[in-house]
Length: 418
Image (cartoon, rainbow, N blue to C red; front, side, top):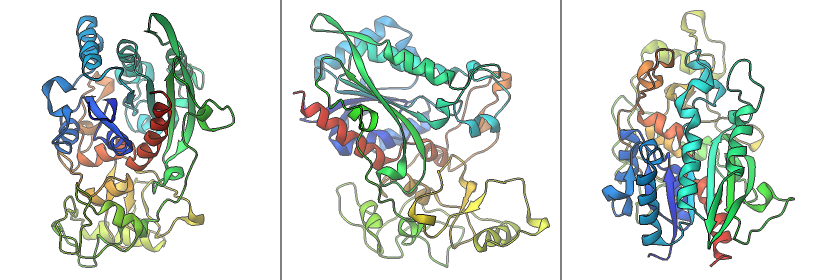
């Protein structure tokens, strides 16, 4: 035992949720992530963690939850090693719930997408492990989604919420359910430089004392907003120089100039990284002259000539400062959705990661990017295999700062239940 609270991280991706919870006082004792590149990202950034043990990480969660004996053995092992698991957290893959991602894919009903039903696997896991708290995270589109074209708006969320309501576990010889609280939060409310609306559903086991209050966020189960999101200038200005090229910047060429930069420019041990220190993931994409011309018009806000126009209607330049002081963008899995606010290029992996509030020491595995069917698969042909390049891992992640603030609130609940 380490004195920290135990968390199981399901559908962990690149580890944004996990890192935020770890910073809040949790220790990750088990992790599952299907995609090898994302799992490698998770593990490489936790070299001294229990999750390095083969018995403490898994790829396909369904192979565990679909095998009652294997799941029971895992639950028993976790309880023997850690007592009651404090938190099971996870955000099942959300591309099938996201309206934008669904439109960009293929004309397949959401009910036919296997990943859209993985919340049931999370519930099966919760029922076996009986954590003190559960945390479910997903995209805003889950609130409006229908399983089929003929379905009713919001039926997916009604099914998900009802399934969590039905969870019942045995504690000290009696059956208890979970008190639920949910809220649609925006990441900037927790200091993240993005709009990024996300549904958070917290469940607290019925034998615990909770801060239940119907007048507060998620019945008191989520923290109040703190705001204070930095501008793109505050996020990026120490990284890029006017002499950017097609190769990587291997060192910082500027000193940090904002509180945000000083918070993310740290070593794993917390030391501030100075000008001249090593920098990773700052590799610049080599654009054609035509693309550079188009990006220059986007940055200037001028009309794009006909010969430079493309079908990328969503592409826009980041502002230097948020209009009205509130972030207006949400980072996606597509790196060319946004152009740097002053340089005619897309963002680097490191810059993309900063908008998700990953620290600069955090490194990512797999190719930088990919496209077409390699990224989306082909659901119309029953092909659900997807590559998960670095930009996509980052775009799919839970912002670290948001996860940390939620985690600190959950720690307060646990401290009141020794």
